[in-house]
Image (tube, one colour):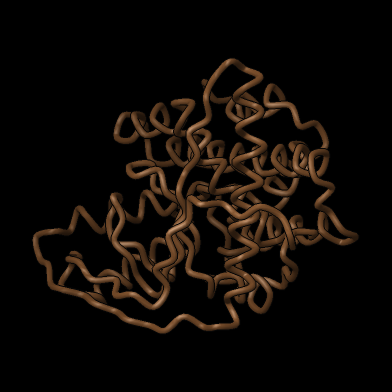
Length: 288
């Protein structure tokens, strides 16, 4: 991906190496880590994992984790700032053409743990978006995991992940996330998971829309970039993650979509660049 020399976003908080601090539930760090691990194995979204943690707040203790940022991450951090700036340019123009003003999210880079308006963020959760404070969170160690654990090397694989989380911000601005959240407790868990899948697939579609317009604005793509993004989408599908984690697949527990679905919707966004083509709820037979 071509990014050097491009504008970097000012909406970045670099808290690598700082203390996570704060209060967390379930008797300290180990309890919370168990909830996170179990949640990830079951395919839960970060928002749902946060809810599980907060529902166990009858017991709490202090948790602090301080780590040192790896100087080798500086190039990755710079690249992420450029990607975020590109999402600002793309979505700013899309909103402008629709007669609206785009409110860009902030992005926080952290090490190990961080406090968010959605609860305690953990490295094990991977990148996530918190609608309560409109921030994207990422521990840069995830970028290494994309390459080593998920076999998705290349800067554009990281860019896809950032664009996906910004896609959740777009859903937040449009009120889509709130509509889905309001269904929690009103429909069965399996039905709610289907809405969660539609939400995640739409964020993949929005990531593709960003890539479509970013390519036309700045010619950012290099050979192999699209394949890198599709590899990342394939690697983090619910079916693939569940199969690798527990040896079998539970479709009713899907919250992000299968590998094929994630690749399909990212590719559709990239090929069309048209927001009107991204009604994943209708595509899954759900009310949108």
